[in-house]
Structures are given as C-alpha cells and as structure tokens.
Image 1: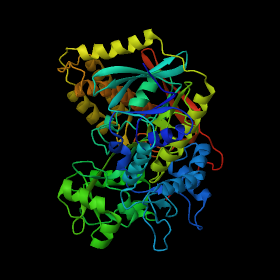
Image 2: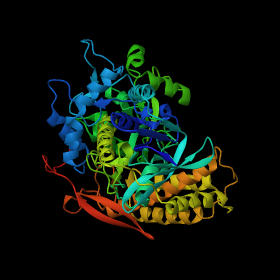
Image 3: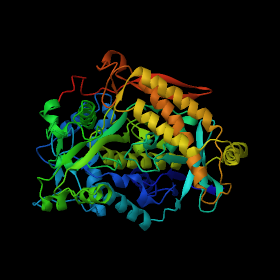
Length: 557
C-alpha cells in the first residue's frame, strides 16, 4: 500500500493547479491515466476571461456569466470565479505563459461569445495548450511524484470518509492501493457518452461515476454544452476565436444567417443559441449535404490568419483538406462540455469528507445551463487552486490517515477481476458506439420527451448487455480492452443520469432545449437537479439556485 497525504486524480489544468497548491505544505501525488501534456485541457483554444481593461468591470463579467448560464449558475460561485480571475491570470503570466500582447505591450484580449466586452486573454489559438505545458513545466520542477498511466478503479470510502483510491497501473499490470487523507478528483468531463464530441478519448467521466457510486450527488447533468463549430466529419474543435476575430457563418445560399436570429450579436451569440441556429438551418434544407454549414474567414487575409488562428488553419488543412485562406470551413455542432458534475461548494468539497473535485468533473455551478467561452480555462485555474488549498488545510488537520479496510480493498479488486474474466458474447466497442449514437440522436441539441424515453430504455438495455461482454485479452499489462470496459461502465451510468435529468427538466433553458417545452419555466425549474445513486435506482431532488445580485429576466441578445 502506497501512502500520500493528498492524491490528485487527473493531470489536466485543474489537477496540476491543485497539486501545485497542495505541495506548498503537504505530501501530494498526481495519478493520471495518460501523460499530463496529453490531457484534454490542451484542446481549449479561444482564451481565458479576466477583467483587466479600465472600461470593463467585475460587475459586467459576473452578469455576462449569470445571463449566459440562463440564470441556473450559482451567483455566489460566479462572483468567486470572476473576482479571483486577475490574481490567477497574473500568476500564470509570472510563471511564464506566453500570452499574445497588444501593440501597447499589455495583454491582448478578444471578445468571445456571450461577452459584453473583449476580456479573453489568449495565446493565438493555442491558449489551453500553452497553459497545459506551462503547468506541466511547474510540475516537473517540483518534487511531486506523478503516477503516469494509472487508472482509478475505485474510491475507497468508508463511514462517509474517503481514505484513498484503488488504481490500475497499466505499465506494470497490477492493482495498487493508495492511502490518503484527501483525494482531489480532476478527471474531466463525460464527452464520450456522445459519438460526436470535441472531447478526447480519455473523457469518459471516470471521477463523476466513481463519486456518484459512493453516494455524493451529481448536479445538473442534463445540461450539456454543444459547440456550434466543429470540423465536419471529425468533430475536431474549431475555436470560438475564429468567430471572435470576425468569422462568418454561411448557409448554402451564401447567407450570413445569424443576422436573422440574433442580429445584435450575430456569430458571437452564446454557444447554445448558435448551435440551435445551425441545426435549424440544416433542418430547413439550407445546410450543405443536410449536415453542416460554412465558417468563412477568407476575408481575414493570410497574415491575420497566421497571427490569430494558426492552429485552425493547420487542423482544417490536415483533416479536411481545406485551406482557410481561400476556402470556407465545413462545421457542425457537437458535444463539447459537461456543464454538470460532482456537486461541490466553492472550495471543491463534496458531501464525502476528504473528497474534493475541481474542473470539468465538478459542478460548483458557475456555468449553469450554458458556459461562456473563456470561462472553462478560468474555472480550472481558480477552482483547481481553491480545491488544492482546501485539501491542504484538511490534510494538515488530520494527524494520520486511516487505512482503507482490507475487506473494502478486496471487494473492489474482485470487481475488476470479475470483469476481466467475463466470456460473454457482447462486444465493448459495439455497445459504446450504440450508446454514442443514441445520445446524439435522442438527447442532443434539440430534445423531446418520447425520444428521450426511448433513449433511456435503450441505455438500460445496453447496461444489461454490458453484463454479457466478453474480454479476449486476459493479461493485465496494458490491457486496453479492460480499460475500455471500465470506462464504458462509467459512460452507461452517466448517460442514464443525463437522460433522467433531461426528462425531469420540463422546460428549455440554455443548452437544454426541449421542443415539447420550448419556454423557460422559472416557477418550477429555477433549481438544480441533483441525482443520487441508491440500490437499484437513481433518486433525484431539487436544490435552490443561489441568487445574490441578479434576478432572472428574459435572456435576450
């Protein structure tokens, strides 16, 4: 059994930022199923929001975020996010982040969708990539041990206290127990529940599903963000920076169609609105091949493209054979971000003592029913730091970590062994593909009750079929089939929670758009939906939204 005072699971931006904070006063280790520079945080491109310009204001950033969330975001948490942004951005700059500069020498800022002011600091269209490598550099400079290619299979929770984790070391092919006073989950989102997603293959909602299993609730899981512009045929993210710099969305008639829907914001309307508009254009026969629209930057010129969106040009050329200097980019909406997650407070604490969560796997609820571009990177840094601070404080107050019981460890190990030994006829990858298609077709950009009922039945059937999967590989060293089976378990659990929440929320709010309930219903659903795992069923309950400054009003742009 290994021992650390704090274990951070996940090595994206939130995980590394938490670990660096804990390391100021406690023994901390990072456990990650892939090498840190490959974490999905690197896919974020557009920028990171912060109020720096004298003509901007904290009040505006808070209001834009509240309004963008369609009033489902908790305003006390949103204020923490926005108020603490400058200290964290300056800290990142002092660490060495190569932010793009304005001609004055100050940090350049661009406008992203839903913002009332250009407040997103950026590094061309590589912001997440640059930040990820910066924090990895800080991690390497520290003495923090990193367990690369270790996959968490269980949280070891007893008597309402998290005592450590059980993890699968793919390199050595063994299961290891790590005892800890505190565990910080920073395992990312559940994007792979959908077959069309911008998310990396690693985004299988592991931390969410494991925490849910141990009794802590998941919040607002029905709120899924679909990004309007992903590269057709690949669903690679085409950054919001493209529209922030002045890109046009065009249908097959050459019409800049956003002027008909949101004339005041055009392409810079919030993501949920733009995604729905694109879907409507395609549905009404004005898309290309009944699948996509065009994102046009040919008016930029080659120099601006090279300076502002070099990665987008490279991605379009490599994966679609399109040179954006002279050709439009074919784009379509796809799942992008997990707005819900493990319910936490503003310090990352869950309802299980010693278990914290930060980043996309957590739901402190700063995004509500729709996230603004530039706020996700900010969330990872602000709440990753805060979760690290609280984990350090919690661990420092405990004299000694109590070891997980041998019976609990043995029980969890037997579950993995049982999965490895299965010899049924079902194929893991066929089940996963079917799940992804079901979620896209029936719990997508537009939703309707009967289709979601069908999806729920299909998900439960897939869960039953999962009990009959057969693994061909019996070894433990780099058994990627076993890893895929463990991940699919999580995806099936989370897909059911998402769909149940979407059925319960009988209204349209932000990214949750129900054709059978097209209006927002504050009287009944200005509330978070919490999901709890109970024997044989998922229980739901409502929780009030924190309203501190702004009362709900019509969300017009």
